[in-house]
Image 1 (spheres, rainbow, N blue to C red):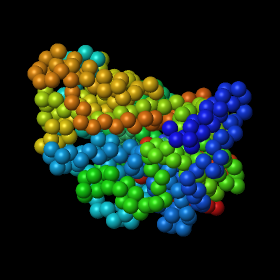
Image 2: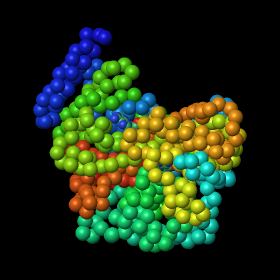
Image 3: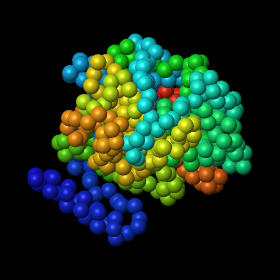
Length: 485
Ligand SMILES: Cc1cc2nc3c(=O)[nH]c(=O)nc-3n(C[C@H](O)[C@H](O)[C@H](O)COP(=O)(O)OP(=O)(O)OC[C@H]3O[C@@H](n4cnc5c(N)ncnc54)[C@H](O)[C@@H]3O)c2cc1C
């Protein structure tokens, strides 16, 4: 360890003791002289996923702001995971699947010079299996006609609420005016409007991200499967991907345009925030070097989990909001095994789903399915949803157990290695950050949105809006106007 590194380690240690000894926010332990570089910018952006990367382009190119963008990853794009498969020479997207034609999405693609077309679909035969046992389930999906009728009703009932929810909760009603439907646990909402024929589709496409689908508040199911998405499934909207069929192309293009504004592989380890400016000590995870970013404004575009927020010394007002958030966790992987069937999607349906109980759905922690990914490959996608503590080892363990059980029961043919081969894996971390009905009735959304600009700090990302890239871009458009007003 170099002298400088030793000094920093000792300082951090003494800071840790100081924090333990007092409940007041820790004072900075890294002086400006600890930084190898000092950067002065108009806006520092922490996080370069969907919301941070889009905001960076707009602030830099449309408003002429100097920016510094900090991301812990070595690349941009957050939940986008493109696997460039050397064995087929083809790309396979196993995180973000496609982009919705919502708000600025198509204009943004044009601006980046990315040609695009409707997202291709791999035609798959569905097999239904209870992943708890590995046994087939005699499940009969709802007919196209019934599903469409239910989706149409879902849209008709929820369309009046769209203005409260999209592209974020800017116009969310005061607690006494919130429509009761938005508070209903989704299973009750489905019963109330008799729309179970579309429940499985809502779950399978994106709704599963909410975790406990049956008990999730309808307003949060709508943040994972919103009205524009319903319209798409009714044939009145499009979803598209780059013609390269590499969703990561969007973020590669952004990365090229942001160039030296990026501090990748880096995290904020300490900060001082105030209305009139911020100092962020940013550590590069590879070199261990520090950059001091001094910014007039701060835009936080990472999930506001407890761990992520530690370096920002949240004050009481901020903690009162973020402490109330709960989350699900998602992992996606590409796996392979000779026993997995080509052209098939093996869908996880509890035995109670037979023959047509459409609200019998897996509960966290679960693997939603094994989907063949097409392209003459030997790739299957797994999609794992769980509670906060679902780490990579547990998630991969569940996928393997599901597979082994199907082989044991004869649902899949035996032979070959015992375990799945994992070709690619991506930990998506916290998604669907949400508050309880009680908190929302107590003005949670209003308190959350009042944080915009508090301590010169602005907030974007899934926890403030919806779980869709294009919606977050539209959310950023509103946010930036307010931020620069
Ligand atoms: C599996 C999956 C599939 C999805 N499919 C689609 C889809 O098909 N279409 C669609 O529109 N949406 C899809 N979504 C939703 C969409 O991707 C998210 O809503 C969106 O990415 C959220 O954007 P964000 O900016 O809030 O966070 P993210 O995109 O997650 O970006 C957060 C960024 O912050 C960085 N970061 C995190 N912590 C720190 C830290 N402490 N310090 C520095 N950097 C940090 C991360 O590396 C990341 O780059 C999908 C989501 C998942 C999980």
